[in-house]
Image (cartoon, rainbow, N blue to C red; front, side, top):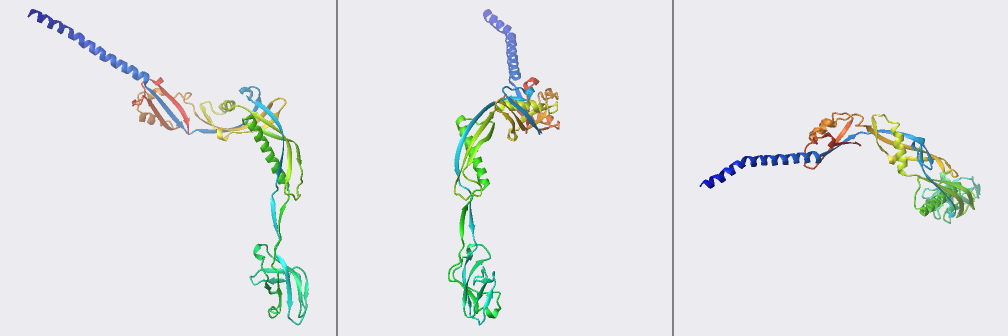
Length: 374
């Protein structure tokens, strides 16, 4: 019996220590979880502005090295000389004459009837023809005369017909009239006459083909391509009627290339000097970017281009001392509500990590803010 009492006493003495250990372990777990929470929790706040636009023209020197201060970007230069000859067909035009033919004027009256040139003859369909010359229709006789319609068109190619003469007194129209025995016909002629526009288009076609040939050979498309006609020959002159004509050109093709990054770096550098200090350049609108070659020296491998560009900018949050510490511990909705108090902000998006996180991190340096233009 005394032995059993001793064992119970020892167990009772250890109980307070066991409780302390459990509390210590619990606090340790809580501490680890808290540290993990602080370390792993992150937030990305996307602030969307209605960006302001800026556009400008820049003169850029093309040289062997990039120097933004001297407004120069590194460029590569190349030349090719090509001779090409091609055959072309001028635009054809169809020339149609008015329908014409021959009519016999029959005079069944007892007196001669003179008919002046352009005397009207009317067909049963209502088509109007006119005489081409003066004729005298003898009494009791007949005379032939050439006629032509007033209007153009295939419908005037009528068959043999009887014509009244509206200009005569109505009582004579059944006695003096016209009669055709052959169909009226039009003369249709297809003319292929070379005009200056045909020759100019031929030159442009040859230049385009020459450039395409060079690009296929170098397997690259430079930023700037300029062509110069050194010699030209055509076997035809404007107003010649020919079915085909030849044009031969000797062309110098000048090619200039530079990297997109070099140009973007230059534009970013130049735009930043134009926008207010408290603003930040967001992007350069590449779709509206154009460049024009102003001059080119093939011997010195240098040139000058004019670039028209457009950029987008918005307030710089760092320069505005944007208060990240005000966002600590807020929910997503509270963040949006708070930031929308700034009138320059159009919209806000919040991304919390890990996914189960419901509030912003408790440390401000775990909050990242990015600006986006719409």
